[in-house]
Image (cartoon, rainbow, N blue to C red; front, side):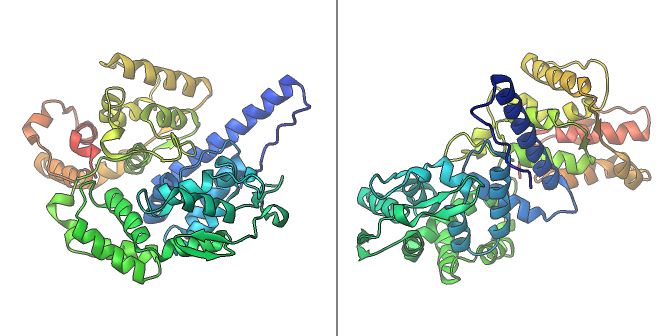
Length: 415
């Protein structure tokens, strides 16, 4: 876990600048390490995917490396466990406390930021609580704070011990009590289940199916792992309407390419720049609502970059200029490539596993295998059409160019 890099306000401007730079470098390293973990076949793919989901759900920006990774480790620990445990851990997470100003939540001047997002975005959703519920929940979380070491502390002299009325119930409630009362509401199970369904199954919801899943989720005392198992082991999850129904997030797209081509970036520059260009920078969601996802991942600025991303990553492994038809993409990739090589960075990748596996196969067999392996849906293009753009000099060139052409199809953007 990286250490917090403190910035001494009494230091010179030059020393403050250096401290900020070190902090940025440390945080960038954590961003690239996480993507590498998502891409690694040695890691638990579902755990990393769930961690990315909860990272967007409990959207929080932290510029302190130690706190950012501390929160990620907390999410990873509970990502497939009890939602109550996850919710309580996030409520005590220092990055979240500071991001939503619970440091300033005191008995004499309650701060409602965390209480509002807890209800609106993290648990039960709009329309299921009142403004008074927010005020009372904020009072219950007074005194939940942190110290200079980046540890959660409960400042009892700043806590409001008076009676509070929350969701029609009155008592001397603290934050734990508020969480328990929220979880007693079946609407909370519905809200979380629908969000998971949209993320992992289909943006178009099936209300009856979500209700059935949520009922089971509630009865299991909010067991996330059991909910995910119910989804993945069901026959309907593999129905045609759910195959390729979602657009890959930028990090899913990048991690998938890295895993397929065994990509290794020796410098952080490409992965940091690609996160920003593609619109999903880890540890820095756009706001407390997180990334909108699905069709919002694609716009005029990202479409051409996404479609040709595999080719662009291959180009980063090669010195010299590359020809990009799209001017915006050319500018982006030239910048990444120049910075990468100027810092003695190299991008390493390999097509060798595919070549060894397919060296005795016919062109049709190669196309069928790669299509099935890479794409969720049957491509809306014929083999003959793809072959017009495939190099045929030798088997190695043929397999390599076929693979990259298939990864540039719109179907590769889907999951």
